[in-house]
Image 1 (tube, helix red, strand yellow):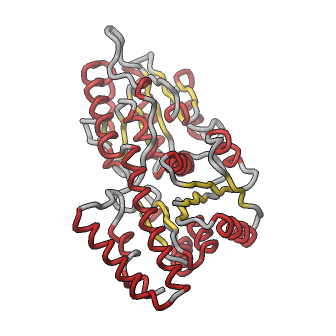
Image 2: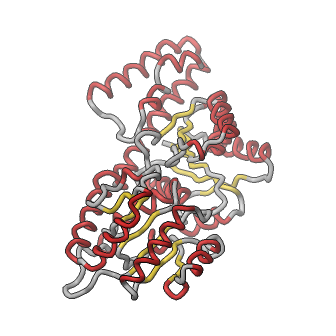
Image 3: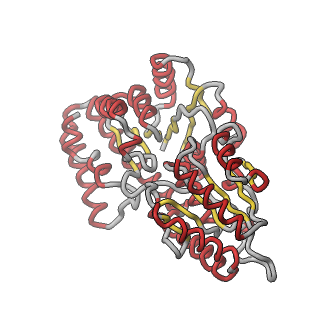
Length: 398
């Protein structure tokens, strides 16, 4: 397949990194993959540095219409079979660039269905994208997210003999200092009373964590708090943490949760977060109801003091992450969705050129879908609605 990975993200965020890394993995498997991102952006420089063999095309222009013209030029030059995006605005840009060619696949961000994350002002973008092209949604239910994980040689199966559980609590806070982050800091302050050597590591950019650091100082935690980039959790060879407390929602929180579980570190996740089902409470970590904070504090204190319990929970977390959110399965699912979208887009283009072949194309698509259902070969992360975009009724409507 010729795959175009399109993103207008300005920085090297975890969700953008997953998208680009997925493209690089598809290229390693034999697909022809090109990345289109904002020209001369920090993301463009990061992609070129991280994946020097991955072709990058810059989307030029500052305004919406200038970017649409630039994206259309890229699509016309590359003639991709499928275009992969991961946000609603990017799906509109891809739809405008591809038009009736189709083949646009949008990965549904974690928690995007939450009412507070989908104000009414955003819904018109989805309607516009669907009006311009045939859009395939991937990963709405169940969610589609993963992380490549550390090299196996860096994953420590168990602590060396005589080594204590690391007295460190890592926190992945929300972008804006919210009540969930405040709860984690208050819990950390009470844990310091039980474990005076406890270190508290806030993951993120120093400037973005200013409010969180001020709150930590008001709780008397200045001497215990450190700030580290999120890459420390995602990419470092080894990390020492008794637990990782996630308060960020969306892709950032889900990716951090998977990364911690892959390393065999128990995770604390508030029950209100959209991805809390990733964690099996008290088996691979803790799913924390708002009213159960004292219990979580007591269990974390016990976990730090109980090495066998820490190792058992960490091993269970690693196994669950591999089984349910393995990177290889994630890439397989993406390849399958892109293949379906690219195959039907080629049929649609053929129908536009030769209208007499419409009936033949519809029968071929229906045959493919029915044969896949009969064989049981289905995508684990593809919701049924995504498959319906490939049915004859949709083809005939176009």
